[in-house]
Image (cartoon, rainbow, N blue to C red; front, side, top):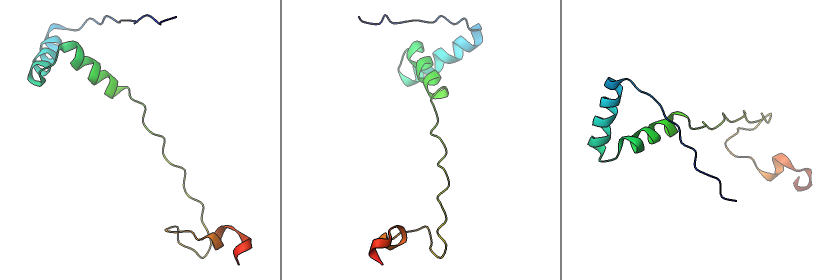
Length: 74
């Protein structure tokens, strides 16, 4: 089954609609395409902040060696 496209109608004040139209024309795209791009960017999920790396006593975190992780190499 193919999912139907869902549309949303938003009512904007005339002055905002005019600004959107001007910016869209300046970029050579439709107002709808401009608004879609702006909304997608504004609602994009941001990548999660990376968890801190574990500390290895006596070693810098720049580069770990196999010896730092496994006992079979010592």
